[in-house]
Length: 215
Image (cartoon, rainbow, N blue to C red; front, side):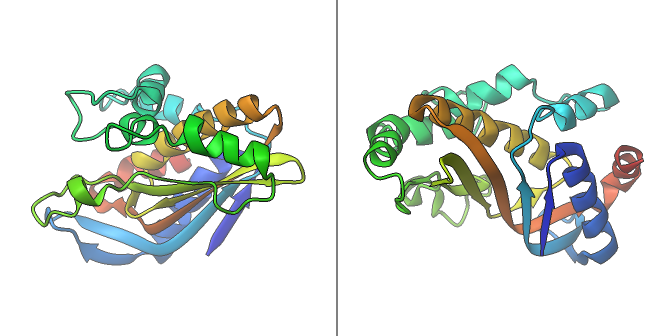
């Protein structure tokens, strides 16, 4: 199933509505009841002027502490491991294995050399750290692929487990900032962003708040 929109709020609301109406119910390993849609693709077309609106809506609720845009950006770009998190994407993107800058040492040079490449992939899942049966906090984002189409940088992001209510607003903003950073380095425009969620889900405990967002 794929949903496409050029308005990030409309895309988010449509996804939440779909999962509530069609999602299959199951209990996760923490005993919470979820509604889940498998392999849901959400594509945000090029117009993204209000990319942070879902984050702002979550902050406005004042029922929980939701990360600010600056904090979310830091998680994506700082290469050191933040002590308050089990992992940070920035460390895995810009210092994978404390060695490899996947963006500046690979993605940008590759796409400058070969704009038609299909090899521009970064990996955020680290088997050394994450392939541990007792580890329940491995990254949600597994990999991100960048492709240049019609001279615009497009982004595909695979998410193994995606809480559409709490997680997706942060995810879409974070990968947008990464796409923007790379596009500026390549001196091209941004294209579409797609998230592919293997488990796109919401928790039944959150349905009252979700319905307020859907409106």
